Length: 183
Image 1 (cartoon, rainbow, N blue to C red):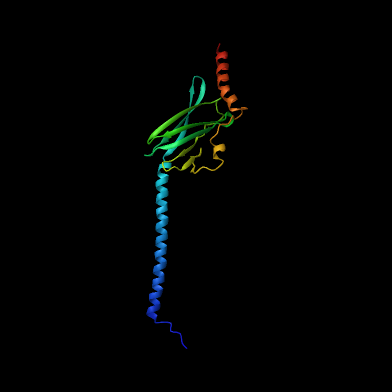
Image 2 (image 1 turned 180 degrees about the vertical axis):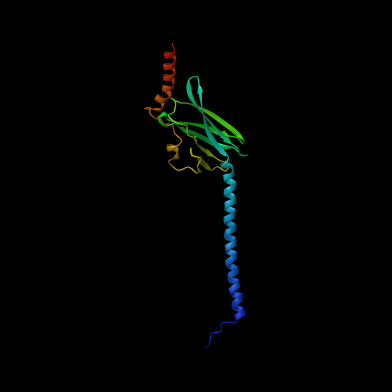
C-alpha cells in the first residue's frame, strides 16, 4: 500500500492558501487595532483640551490663588472638581457642575497665609462628553481616576492647621492682626 501525497502543484496551491489565510488574519488584526486606536484618539482629543493653571494674586492684603480651568474642546465637560495643594497652608478644593465648549472657569481660593514656595498647578477631575471620568494631575498627567484619588487629590486638608475650619479662620485672624498693627 502506498500513500498518494498528491502532485507538486497541489502542494503549492495548498501552501499558498495557508499563507493567504495567515495574511488575511494578520491584516484583519491590524485593522481592528487601528480602529481601536482611532477611537481612543477621538476620545482623547476632547480630554487633552481641558487644562488648568493657577495665578497667585494679592487682594486686600490677603493671598488669593486664582485657579483657571479651560475647556478648549467643542464639547462640554461635567462634574469638575479642582484641588490646589499649598503645602503647609493646606489643600483647597471646589466643585463646578459643567464647563461649556471653549469656556474658562475661574475660582479664587483665599489662602490662610503666603505659601512657602511656588504654587503648584491644580489637580482637576472631570467627566468628558462620553461619560468617562478623568484626572489631570498637578504635573499634567492625564489618566482615569484610581480608587484613592478622591481622598488623595480632591479633598480639603488643613495643612499645618488642626482643621480646615482653623485654617479658614486664620485668614480672618491674619487680617485682624494686620489691621491692628497699622493703628
